[in-house]
Length: 111
Image (cartoon, rainbow, N blue to C red; front, side, top):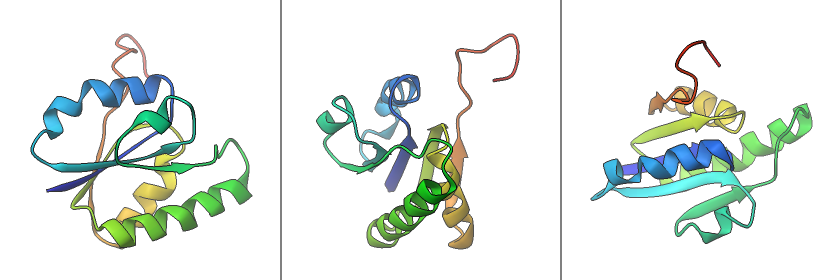
């Protein structure tokens, strides 16, 4: 199964990397932000940080659309942050399965 892993760098990436054992035997690739740490990932597509800019969100959506059309994953998994928004909207359009994993660092109150 081809799996797309979408997460920002930092804590969201750390959580995703802890889940990598679950994807053994599957073809997995990352869509994440460009950073020193993410450049070390084997299969990755690196985007510029979206931040709060609607224009950057649009650019990220176009880039994500191209990636998902090229790769055609069966499922998209995300631990967050805003980088998952365009990926999940596009997944909905193409009827792709999605899994969002809420942060396990907050166990007393919502994030």
